[in-house]
Length: 82
Image 1 (cartoon, rainbow, N blue to C red):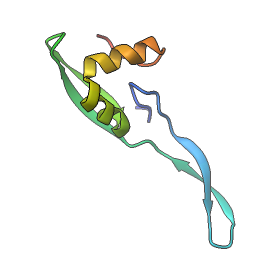
Image 2 (image 1 turned 60 degrees about the vertical axis):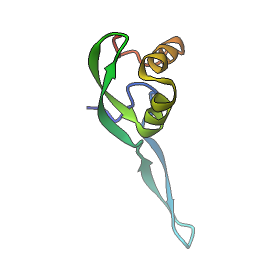
Image 3 (image 1 turned 90 degrees about the horizontal axis):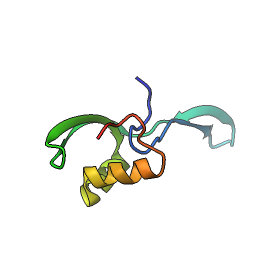
């Protein structure tokens, strides 16, 4: 399973640890992903997604169905069937 958000497409990024002496070593920044089941009342069914916490906050604000529709319009959320 890849570390990618199903809705926003957030992926791990690379960067540097920077020490007090300003030495740099490679590191990864991973998105905060959670496996979550959502009830979609418009479809009358449950869907399971792996989403970032920032996407969860937006879903709480606008609703799961509207958020998926807006992400599909942007060309994201390709693997989500609604």
